[in-house]
Image 1 (cartoon, helix red, strand yellow):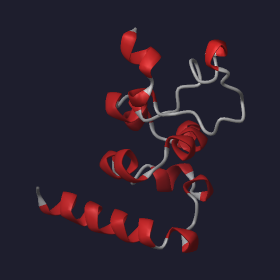
Image 2: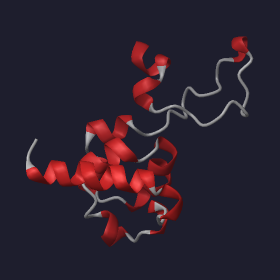
Image 3: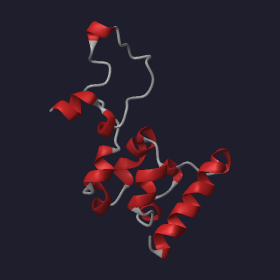
Length: 104
């Protein structure tokens, strides 16, 4: 791991420890979000929070295939009527964990 990845890891871990005292990412400007490394967004940002800031991210981040897999799967979530899933089952899982997306 190079030094910048070590720094990202350390900063991300500290932000997660003190999350209740941090500013939500949705409050950052477009220009601020441009400097967030993709590795930080992949590892420390929840799928719902990523969806909330997606329109603010720079195009270079939006083109990242790994980051796209961290978005919530709204296409398949709560569409399984046979198992009794409802809209109150919690947040949608990331696309990378959606079983229907994995099959397709």
